[in-house]
Image (cartoon, rainbow, N blue to C red; front, side):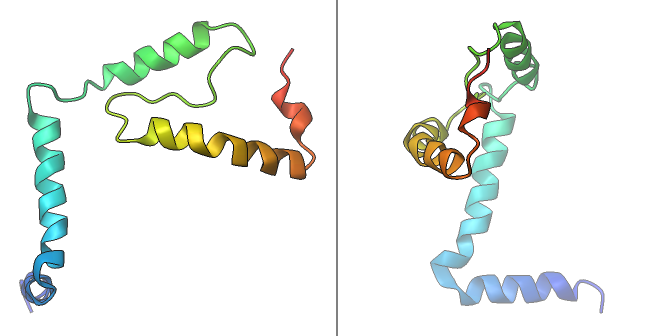
Length: 99
């Protein structure tokens, strides 16, 4: 049945009411972000990697956010102590100390 999948998808999207509109809203938001005048530049990733490589051993950040953080910077900061405890519990703390 040609095009049946799209009909079914639209049917279920409508049946979910406002919640069913979320995927379309997200798609529109991301499309506008990537097509706008302030769209992310893929070269920024290469620059971030080059910057990390250029840093001295043991001084690099565990994570590097490139572009809009969308709260990931705060999440990384908040979860760091939990991750450190997991590494310690696994007996791998020695791997965190780089000479």
